[in-house]
Length: 133
Ligand SMILES: [Zn+2]
Image (cartoon, rainbow, N blue to C red; front, side):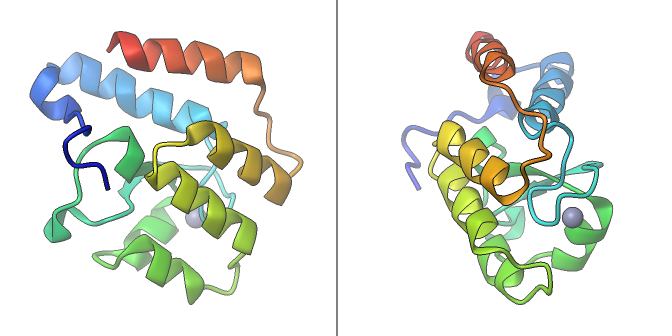
């Protein structure tokens, strides 16, 4: 983790921007859970807040309620390895996301699920929104 590079959006932004930011996280994956591919209904912290995880894009992934609830306070990478829907490509995507390489993460997710509706065009748009926030 690059703690010094991390920008806490909660610190920077009022609630409105925080909501926009949450939406943009869902848009990155086309509203799809990063773990199982079902519709994402929540934001999950890869490293739980209870373990010092930050509210940054790098640490926050779109997740369905079932994965988010089941994972609870576990580290996502450990938890994910134990799931029946485990897919090494998704695990790599989660790791890339955590390292801040969203472009690679999305490419890996596309590979894991060719039905993902992610276009580079959307990604560029999201990226500029994120920078503006
Ligand atoms: Zn899920």
